[in-house]
Image 1 (cartoon, rainbow, N blue to C red):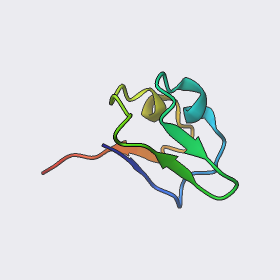
Image 2 (image 1 turned 90 degrees about the vertical axis):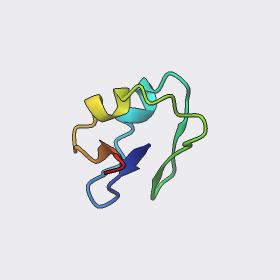
Image 3 (image 1 turned 90 degrees about the horizontal axis):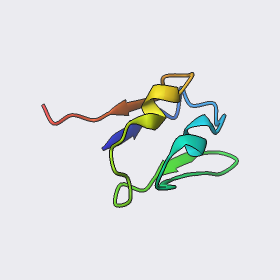
Image 4 (image 1 turned 45 degrees about the vertical axis):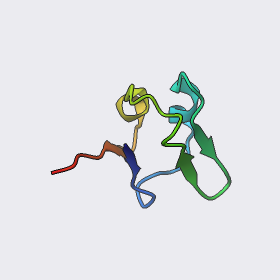
Length: 59
């Protein structure tokens, strides 16, 4: 799963544009990732200029 640090996210929308399955939605105040649709490609993590997206691990 992809974790969003909402304190770091500036809602630039860069991640929305690279998602191949359109599982990222954005409103005026928040970003959301549909975990059921996400294919864990991590493109969103790679392009986030704020480093607000991280891959969650089960340690």
